[in-house]
Amino acid sequence: MFKHRYPCPEVIVDAKAVDRPTMDVLASQVRDFLQTMPIRTHPEITAWEFFTAGVALYDFFTRLRCHDPAARFEEFLSYPLAALRQFRDENLEPLVEQLLVGLDRIAATASTVNGRLVWAYADSIVLPRDKKLLRITIFSAEPVVKHFMIDGHTRPAYRVGGPYQEPTVAWVNWAEADVRLGGGTGQYPVYVQSHAIERLHERVPFPWTWDVHDAMFTSLLNPVVCDRRPGEVLIEYRYNGYRLGYFVARLVENEVVVTTFLFLTMQGTPEAKRLRDKLKLRRPDIEHLRLDEITTYCLTDLHADPELVAIFKECGCGHLLDLLTPEARAQVPTGFSREVRRYLGLHQ
Image (tube, rainbow, N blue to C red):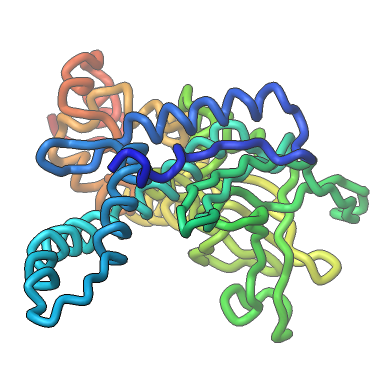
């Protein structure tokens, strides 16, 4: 059966890719990913083994033919074929989905809209004698920059795109029907200013910066309009399912420009309005209590006060208290929740 195995998956870097040394490192990471990504079989095999031996074995049995008048051979083959079909049906679709998501994640570690765009594409190549080869290509390109006149100044902005299971970079475009910025009916290419990217990383200061940046791309790829202001919309920024803030976007020259990023409870957000309506907290109060900083929700004992938790949930920001694991919560210092209670005039 060894001669019927398919070639090992091929991971290559596109000839036009920029920053070849970094792309070679990513290609090595993709190979490691394929050689370690498990498929839940008995015994367990890896994706690498599935694409070389598993698919070859299935194709080998499905091609077998025998001119047997009594059809005994066909009946004999029906048992392994049934087992292989079940294996394929149960594993192929989730495996491909896991593979594509994994490729996007690896590409995202090196891709930034204002630095270097990186993406990967997987394709099945048919070789002589009907053998199949899984080929994964790593691509990279320089960012697309355009200058816009904003508030009387010419400012650069970067076209938003990223890795999204496509053979080319996935560019972000918004339909007017979804964002209702200009009253037309067309599609708007989306750009983002460096200022917005800098504010995002400043206000969501997680150490894994590539993941924060990739969440910007996916949030803008599937925009959720939360609020509208004259000439602008607020678009949710979602990180691992958590709403952490908003991108402020406006229409400029029939294209959309993201001008800044607001943390969830900063002035101008729906949550800040609810905090004002519920607790009479205005911008100086929120800044004094540091309720406009993500670390306040992650690295203090606010989560341990049920009344404060209920208030924050009512104001739309209670989920920020769920960012830490129970183990990490046990490590945070105590006392901040008492300070907040005193400031708000809540009974101890």
